[in-house]
Length: 311
Length: 311
Image (tube, rainbow over all chains, first blue to last red; front, side, top):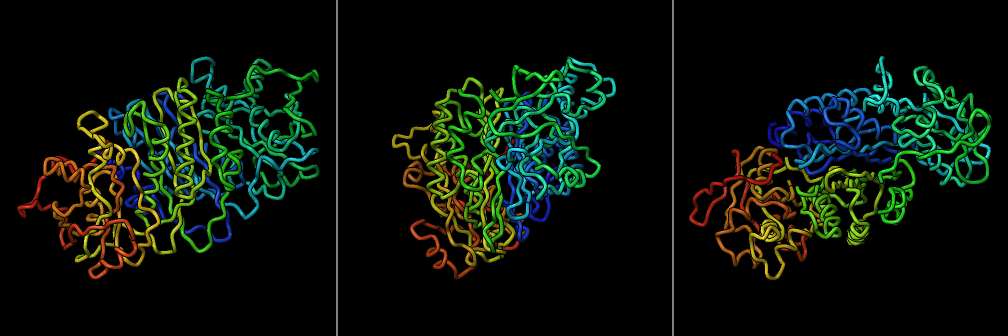
């Protein structure tokens, strides 16, 4: 591996936009887009915690960006750029960094973002990565978790529960002949670019698991959520696995779909805003507290865990 | 240790300002100060690389913020707020997090910044921390590394080389009866708040070592720097150690003082801007390339290493 400054010059500086000053200064300098509010989020990915050793570095890079892009999507924000930290073991081959940078470039182009700055370090134990994403939103238009009202419908984008099945496949616990689940786990599709302001009253992305993430809206909005498990949209591959994987699908994380609180009568506007992306109504908010998941028999389901927590 | 959400609520949410939304949303929402440019920087601190196991968590927190604040200072920016990531081993006692949060609070008050958001994770191997700092600067007023001109004088703030002597003391390689060196190593004083725009033509902070950091201005400005080792300001404690520690002082990192390029005739303006903080002229820029350090005998010094690099 070349030394720190050579690595930055070769692999990371070409990813920097104008505000990044070629990664040659102590910080980035950015003129904020006029008339917009800033939206800021950061997520980390650690070897052994968020990804497994030996995974494709390009996919790790893209998931790092996409997890953060999903947070911007959950706020209704348009992405602008990002800062990056890398902590890499000395023995890591240069190929790894080349693949990682290629993944960053690919997603920079897809999501129209640029590298603003960063920090690189050696690591004694495994790879540690963070990305801080910067986005913008019209003033007052950020989607919050606390905006849901009793009577609002609960909608989700896409399909729920593929990523946890992909994690099981990656661990050798499940067959995945087409690679669909694995792909959904390794390369989520953040739902950025939807014009949800004025349609949606609250939003969150499914990062830790549908039930747990929905519980955050419930807590912040002071409501009870009632959803029907049978309405939670499954991909054809997940649907084929039936009831056996339902608990896992409802509490597994990493889907990076959006949970949306939608006032009654706004379904058509929501569908229009989502275009080709399917959206599905799974329940409604009512006065009270907690998340109630109804089984097909109409009884409340119990869960061993509501979702992923870091101890 | 309480679970992830309890930890955030107990120790980190009280540190969040209005833009942090109580750390209860997917991202922070911040109205950028009108008529200012944004300055963004990120640094990481890893156990075993940037700090030693068993160190005071409050001091680790404060150094994490201060290293980043120093980057803002080097750009001439006023700090606004920060995002934080923590990756903590499961076995870490809750006391550690309490001390860490107390350190954050102390420096938030000193530097008038607030917590905007963050991400917390478990860690398999040691503590890993990052802070992303956000500051602002008047449009076009950011201090760059590429602005120095031939004939500009080279000035430094404070004293140079105490921190590396402190690192040696912390490793048991040097006596430090008053604790002065150790203090300078553990708790640097970032030089934020100086009104240097219009006085200084280029700036960088001393994070990796004076000679190496000066070489970055030299490279970006396309110049040669000639400094006199005997002019590089030493604290009384470092001066008492004499020539024996000169190489270490000139190439040791972590001082977080500023190296400033100052056009001729601006010395009085510089001193006025720095107020009680001493500033010292150590050399000048001239056409050419590289950094030349002259010994007391007027010969060019050779260095084993110019400063700290991550492999």
